[in-house]
Image 1: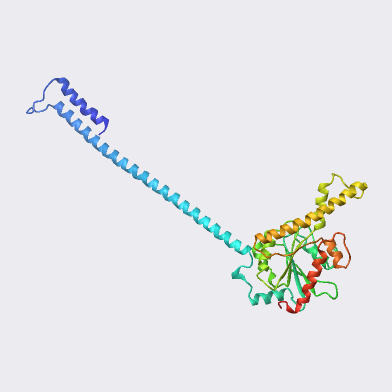
Image 2: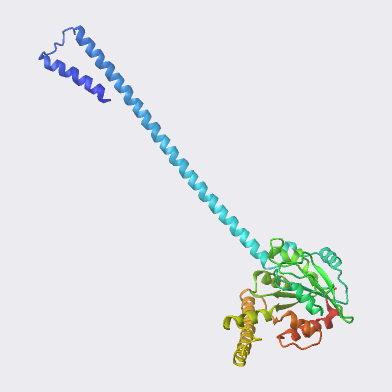
Length: 350
């Protein structure tokens, strides 16, 4: 009951009490009393209606609040389920791409028709060694191919070179030596937006080559590891790991240890001797760290151990032209091991 109705009834009772009269049960109420009773009754009815409306409003408010709470809980549950589904999808995508990164996707393993088509496309010739030079963009693949062919980078028949990736398709180069049995292939760089790591091996048909040289510059990358994993699925492929630009790395490391402004052509005898000593130490350090780094990467990625060859293009050019080079490290060994592959030509996958 509302406070107004209660006040009205209490007022009527108070008025009767103030009159000092005791109501006669048999008496007929006067007009004023009737009006007062009617007003009180109306107030009471109004109060009761107000109470009922307030109850209904309260119930409606509680239902609205309960519905809002339920909707909020449903929204939160839906959001949690969506987040969980997104996480599962991301985990599935990561797992799939990780499997792809590890090599050839099982569902995309080349068919006989794929092999025939790629061999035709790349002009595969039985009786010759087909050697692809692959690796990350900017690693010096084109310069290396020119050097092993006995050419400088500005030779008219040299592979194009540059500070950015200059090869956009697998390109075949003959060896100009008349007795050579090798075709060299310059392959676009791995790990670019145009060629993600997990697509590289299959999309470029690297499975048809007899030998693959994985060439890297400074850091052994995930792209290099992806190629090596894929190669292990094909027993016909002989793999070489080659670190390029050894001369540049050694010189940069030596100059970092010399005083600013050092010029080996205008230094005194003592400074030149120190320079040569540091260069010898740095050369040994580069060799040891490169071998250790590559083997660690291979082992941690469950790839069988492999020899790594450390070279520079000038020394490769000299050795392949039967000339000595003071910068040479593993160039002669690489030349001998590649040449050894030609002795197995009749047994190569034709």
